Figure 1: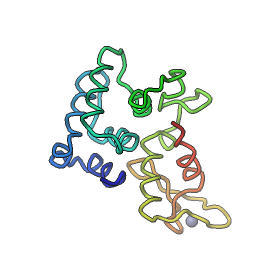
Figure 2: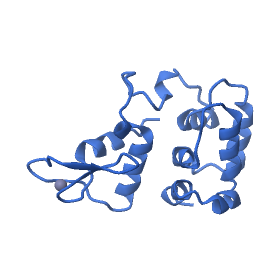
Figure 3: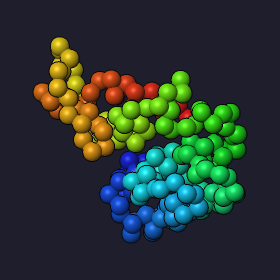
Figure 4: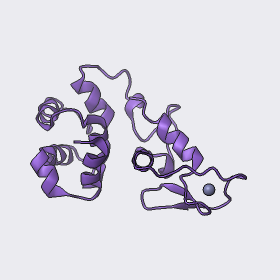
Length: 165
Ligand SMILES: [Zn+2]
C-alpha cells in the first residue's frame, strides 16, 4: 500500500482497514505497552517510517523492545528493524530539533508529516512576492498563505529537512 494512503488510514481513524492490514495490532501495542498517551493519529508517523515493512515484522521487533522505558519513536523503531543501533537519544527525539531545542507545534513531526502529505497530493507552495503577511494554521499546525492558499515556504523547507532518519 502507498505510504500516503496508509497514513491517511491512521489520520482518519479507519480502524477497520488498519485491522485488516495488521497495523491495528501495532497501534495497540505501542499505545498499551508504554505509559505516554497515544492517539490513532499518532500512528501516522510510524506508518510513514515503516510502511515498507510487514506489520508482523514490526510487531515482532516491538515485542523485543517491550522492556524499554519509553515508547520507541518511529525512527528508533525503523532503525531497530534495520538492525542499526541509534547513536543518541537526542537524535531521534521527535520533539527536539537537531540542536536539541524544543520544536514549536508547526515544526513538530506531525505537522511536517502532514505538509509532506499535502505536497505529495499536489498542494502548491506559496510563492507570493512579497512574502504573505497573513498565514492560516489548521488543526494539524499546517501553515498556509491567506492570499493564495499555498503552503508556507519555511514550513515546506522544514518538512523536507525533517526526513533525516
Ligand atoms: Zn501565497
